[in-house]
Length: 102
Image (cartoon, rainbow, N blue to C red; front, top):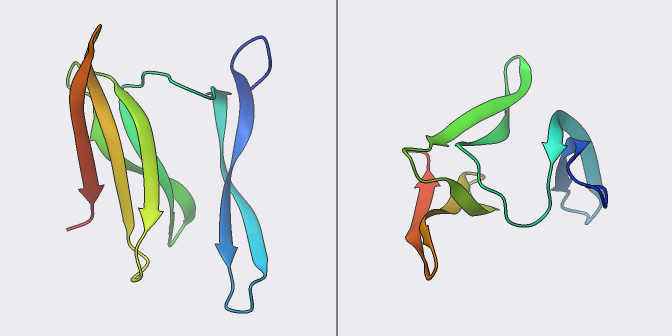
């Protein structure tokens, strides 16, 4: 992000090997990344498939925008995503969600 607003950037996948070394791979791009709080209508993450990297849709907003997204990978390599929906700004109110594969 630049000091004047959203900026393009890469989505980078990082993995740590058993020996402690790291490798990184660019898996996609975003046209207007913004650091901090921002509302969005869709929530996706990049996933490697048979045709390379691509987005996997996690959730589609149903009127309330998403904010504050977190991603963790469990011991089996499965992603777990938490996110919140905001229903009111003052005082702040909403719901916190957890998503994982079935």
